[in-house]
Image (cartoon, rainbow, N blue to C red; front, side, top):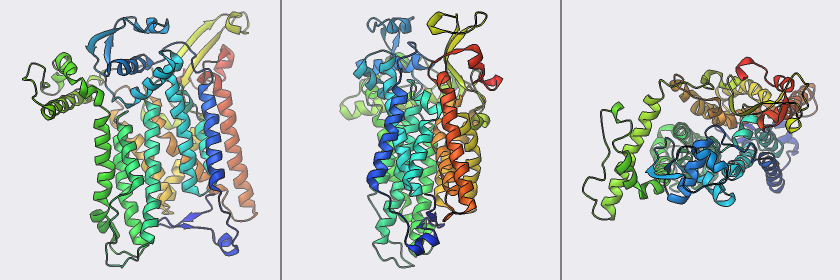
Length: 541
């Protein structure tokens, strides 16, 4: 449990009474993995249940499902005819795609993930949603393992996995063909790899005697940091928002390296780590992430001439001084290197257009479900992604009174008890990092800061509550750490009893809240009165 306290430099130190009596239990790795896999299978079951309903393109599925199919069959995104959604839902996938490339405003990794599901199961709602369901369940597995590593407790690792499993926002995004669940998954993988790298580095340094005035060994190859770089590249290749998380954890990795060297007696560890560890970390994280990111555009680069011919003069160049791409009318590039260079230049200009779209074109737009990031942690404005209203009594099993009706809805909103309790836990995490100097709370604080605060810059344009899916893993970690703290009093005591009651009651309330909201996350049939008992505020309508 969180009864393993940490020093400022992060060394694991069992509580004094348990350490003195030799009673600290050894966690069984098999049990830890078995429990994590079991919870992930539970998450997968919940996310696959009636996944093909509603039989419709919900919210932005209308873009990503078609883009994914286009990538799968043509290698790049193409425009489609009017009424394409109805034709696809009727089972038709031919005669829909035009020859011109489509200007998409997000990178392609998430769409390729959706395409894998369409390849395996076909172009239907189940096919374009199944990849999100699998990735959402794997996200629960990674959460179990990360929380277990941070706390040293299989129990708390399971608690963290179950809290993530029972969050409505994560559930619904795992049942939609949107990009955000893929971005959140890759971010969580990258953070988990950074934490693993911290422990790996300390083990390596512990094997070498270090002199106070020395720099210590340079660790040129850090496998877990390489995994983090690949994961960050895939996250940025899904949505650009992951870049701020990469920056934040890049700095944190450097600080951890300095703390590791200081804990083994090296003086002036921070500047020394800047010289010997920061460059290595930069290559493993930033350079690797950049290479992976560019590689994710391979399909685009192979068809760059299509974009040069059709889009070079038609996009948002009026916002950036009239710059234009290199076009197909220019002399053909001679040789593979020259052709690749021209394609990369075109990709650069394409990115300029996309950036211009996000920073200028959306400024005057509005949306019914847009919300301010200041209220995201309180679930200020959920997103209705689908609704079937005014279902008459007797239709579809509606048992409403004769003067009323039923409805079905899919609402993108988190489990309220979890999110509202998470606010308290996040405040405690700040205290734990600043006052208690516990490095584990730094993971939480930096994670929330880099996934939440950047959105305040863009609160004058349509942004949505479900972007907070990247905040959720760190909120779950904060809750898990706080619950561990409540359970960590040594031996039988009133404090431990009270902490167990509070932590246990909170967990039960989360599960009950999840069960109560289940119908409005999964297109369940409700009478109007039943629906109103779940819509607690007018802004949730």
